[in-house]
Image (cartoon, rainbow, N blue to C red; front, side, top):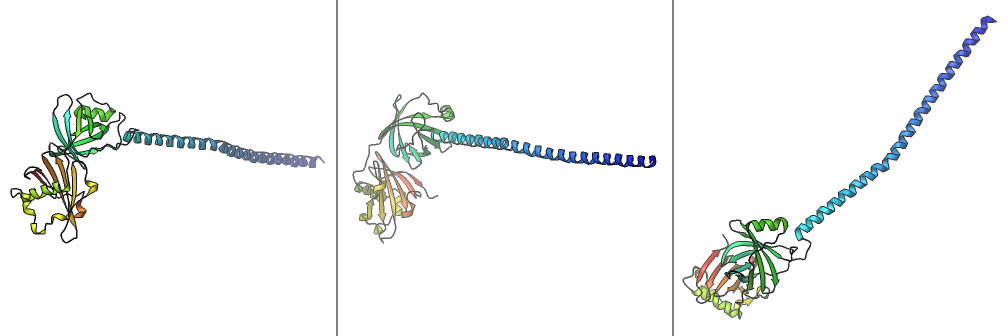
Length: 297
């Protein structure tokens, strides 16, 4: 009996050890399952935070972009009204302090001062925060100046921006203390279409003028002139001349500067207003050409 008892004891001991191992294995798998569940729960809990961070970042970025856009718009327009001042045509400028006079002619982006075309100009779309209409002017040598204009109708006042005052204004908007320039629209005007046509014929019949060689009088009929209302006002008269054949024609613009007149010719109906062919300044009294510029070269 003793012989078998130790065998039975050994079998029971082995069963106990095996049972412990199985229990340990089950417990280990249960622990792993719990760890996985904890990890999943942590991920779920962290996801909203990450999404909230992303949304916050996105909102901050959109806000920054909107602020940047607003700053750009404000820099362009200064947040004020659109400039509607009409400066086209001829003006007499006079210094309010020194009384020095000069003649200015603003013509579709080109500026003549005392009948010399040495400048181009651009009117800014918006008034500045002080209510000035800003006109940038560039000389042939690329030097830049500007006018700050106020007023309406035929009477304007201007401050000039040059050198340091130009740089200062376009850096921080500082308006300089300087001499005010008074601008009065040139009062010279045309009584009728006949007055302009008479001058054109006088110019082309004056043999001393080079331009007189460009006309064939046998093809000329005075009755073919007509006024173009859309381009005629104040000191400017625009005429259209129809070819004698009835097909096509040309435009001629007359701008009065007192004793002198600037005449610009556009060869061909499609050439007006962007492609003038020749511009010349003449004396009203005798039709003598005092300055001429070929614009096709």
